[in-house]
Image (cartoon, helix red, strand yellow):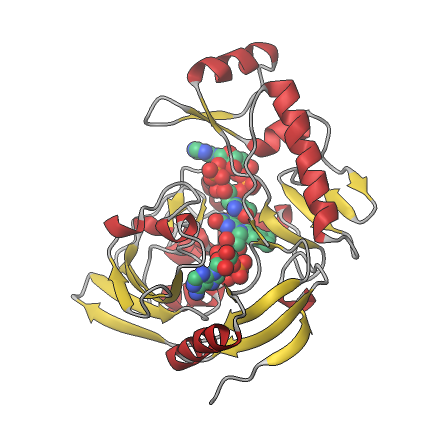
Length: 339
Ligand code: FAD
Ligand code: NAP
């Protein structure tokens, strides 16, 4: 028995919103054996097991009547290296941004646009994390997960993960898979993605005409530090809503009324609207009700000024959804995982 199970643990330090709810039981997994032991414990004592990583994509609306298992497994290894492509594997509990920094320090490119995203390696496939024009599916080389239904390990290929915008098989089958380790195919020669948002502009301002992957990472870190609240200072879960995909006809109707609408054409003919623009245009930016608020600099981010409950944050989110639906006829979908 290496698993240490504690009773009645506050989850405040384990969710980036800083919401103070209690877990009936709490443990950390430092090995695959710990994960299996926690699942066996749950079966024996008839307690559901909720697996979490860094807690940066959670909205906790009540005490959690489960064994909350925080993935704390560590380890990074190179699986293959043909001189140009390197396949690298990391354990689920590895913190994401330090892992990205580690790959860059090894001279490997591919993850630089995903710098400074909070959370763990194991949660990254859950919503196919993405930023600045790159998603993990673009460099994904496989993962190993434990099937909680059969108790067996399974290796997943890219095609088997059903990755889509902020979505995956693992999100579609909640609670079935424990992701144990993830593999990425990275390049020794950088193929940089600079055309998204203000990335190239920031590099130009810094006098960098021929950036390295590390330059791109640093530029993205500086942009993110300016725009996004640090959860250690102001509780948040990043973007609270997904960018909605709407028909070209609806986007054109909204643009007729609001010529400054921010919208991007998708390959399938739909338009992706910037949810942050819709919320800001509806007047919510900087709004605050008790300790639940909309960030002053980025309307897509809901914040906890101190003692907001998950239900207060949820209530604010629902008010925003209703208003956006009435004004623009657009449905906003929440991004964080709600428990
Ligand atoms: P958690 O919040 O702990 O868990 C998320 C979900 O995954 C839960 O349903 C949990 O049950 C499940 N889960 C966690 N680990 C495992 C596992 N090993 N096996 C099975 N299930 C698991 N996201 C982006 O996509 N792009 C961004 O640019 C971005 N920026 C952010 C900026 C800020 C300031 C914040 C606070 C969040 C941001 N996010 C972003 C959201 C979040 O950081 C990511 O979704 C991240 O991958 C969540 O990782 P986590 O370890 O914190 O997961
Ligand atoms: P931004 O650069 O102000 O852009 C606003 C929105 O427009 C973004 O949501 C982005 O969509 C979209 N966009 C911008 N340039 C685009 C382009 N060239 N082509 C297609 N779409 C474009 O956004 P931001 O809020 O500062 O965030 C920057 C990046 O980090 C974004 O990719 C965002 O998704 C990511 N991010 C995610 C989270 C999260 O919690 N999920 C939190 C913070 C930042 P996309 O979101 O689809 O990229």
